[in-house]
Image (cartoon, rainbow, N blue to C red; front, side):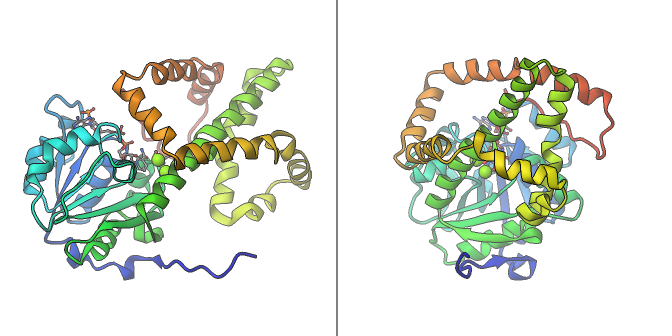
Length: 343
Ligand SMILES: NC(=O)C1=CN([C@@H]2O[C@H](COP(=O)(O)OP(=O)(O)OC[C@H]3O[C@@H](n4cnc5c(N)ncnc54)[C@H](OP(=O)(O)O)[C@@H]3O)[C@@H](O)[C@H]2O)C=CC1
Ligand SMILES: CC(=O)[C@](C)(O)C(=O)O
Ligand SMILES: [Mg+2]
Ligand SMILES: [Mg+2]
């Protein structure tokens, strides 16, 4: 049994909106996180300026939502809080473009600590450097806020020049809906290392390899692609929703005893304690020693040759064609917000 928690879970009542109500927030970027933060902040009554490139296709979209849009340098110069929601590997260049607009007592804020932790951005000592990181894809940050709910989030303070960094971070977290669910405080290092590990080994990398391999195993054994898609990809959300709500036993108690026994006895055939654990430890080591960060920075400095090739292969996987055609034939239980494709 794990020890008693040492961390505090902050809820709405722990946030003091007076720390943000007179502030102007520049949300740089209007993508997955950016659109959600800007719209949620705006709906919460916070003064928001979106910072975008002049040729951004999101500029008219943000304006159509009633948001003010400026170029990042103009937005940051007017703002008290600059939330950096452009892609991680773009942030250093955007930071250079807005740095002169940061005044003593302003806040430079992130939703992921990559560039601070790996030393790609070094802010002046007279500004607060904080993080408010939803533990959720951006489109669900917005969707849950609109439903009157919120997604869990993290806050972290890297530099507290004003003495108000934590309180202001909590007020920001409340304004985007995270304290409706719960917010815990961490450090930039812990957020970066756990987030990179989690998205690589479990949430995005690991689970999609399981889905694709399960699909391929069934199809190669002669089962129909439709059956393989529904079994190995489509139902995953429904299973994981139960885990999200009530842990492993919430799911095991809902599935059949047959599934429970089969799952508990055969799960390790696939994700075993030797090779899978070794792989996970390798992922973590490359995050901790900076190898992944250096590889990703270099990949972007050389116009993303591997990323483009691997992304094309992912898009070309049969499960994407089969799944796309099947999803069009099936009703959706909830209004599906189209997630625009990455550039
Ligand atoms: N995606 C997620 O759910 C999560 C992301 N994060 C973090 O949030 C941050 C943002 O990621 P994410 O929301 O995925 O980013 P996206 O790729 O979804 O969006 C990027 C946005 O940045 C804009 N942009 C790109 N280049 C520039 C530039 N040079 N100047 C100004 N704007 C630019 C793009 O607009 P355009 O191209 O139209 O100019 C777009 O609006 C990252 O630090 C990420 O790690 C943290 C938690 C979850
Ligand atoms: C959505 C999220 O938390 C991720 C997977 O860490 C990310 O998008 O970087
Ligand atoms: Mg994450
Ligand atoms: Mg991440």
